Image (cartoon, rainbow, N blue to C red; front, side, top):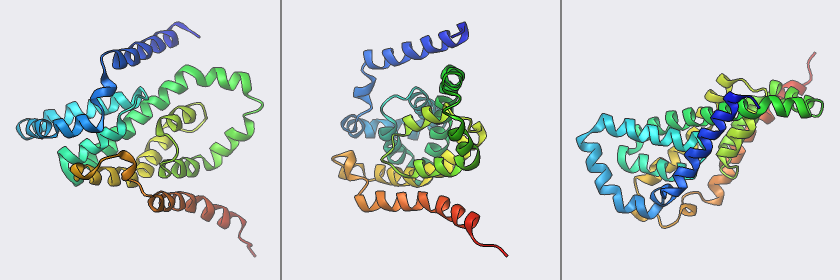
Length: 224
């Protein structure tokens, strides 16, 4: 590992350690969000642009570093900015943060992984080149898969960065809308698991799998 990779790895490690040392995980909790909702809303009313900038930077940092708290921040987006602006803001900052995590994983580990397991990864790389966008879209729509893990693992593949970004933004949009809308009714939420019902998760899964099934059907459809 060269010096630039070591430096980046060190910066990331220090940032993650500082987050937990200073209790960042306690601030990004449902109880804290409820307790501070009025104060944050008041700050947003007085300093609208600054509130968006600060919120966006925090969200990007949390997502890029794969730290816990993105769900709470998405709820906060709805509680503070409303459904329309909350969805737009979260959609962009979450996609930017995810892409930064993707790029960090690619820069740090892709070359070594491909060099060590290149022969075994040929079929996977071929599949990503052919259907990577469809696979990523499916994973983004199913909330059962941790998004931070998707960001990191996709960074180890040959998927194009531009494809990762736009598919992530499109695939996460439905879930973003659900959580931002839930944030507007924050007082009614007692547990994060209350937001997504099994039926809703199943619907997302079917929606995500459909494009891949449709593509396979078209490819295998008999032609004259």
